[in-house]
Amino acid sequence: MTLLRIEEIRRMSETEQSEELESLLKDLMRERGVIATGGSPDNPGRVGEIRKTIARIKTVQREAARSRGAGR
Image (cartoon, rainbow, N blue to C red; front, side):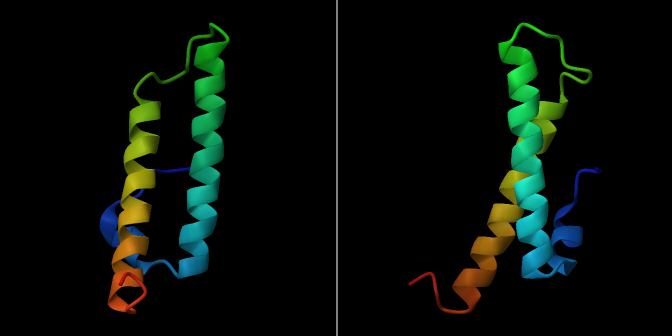
């Protein structure tokens, strides 16, 4: 799983964006679980990268919703 740039996210369909968001949320939960149990994550910066990618996907989804008029 690679972390995505905004251009890559915009090229995805809505379904692909939703699937990727779900996958990232599961990864984030897994990483946080490792940290909470006292473990050491493989890549400590990964949590921040996952959070930023989640924010990018949500931003693109919100932009699309507003352009369709659903944001009013």
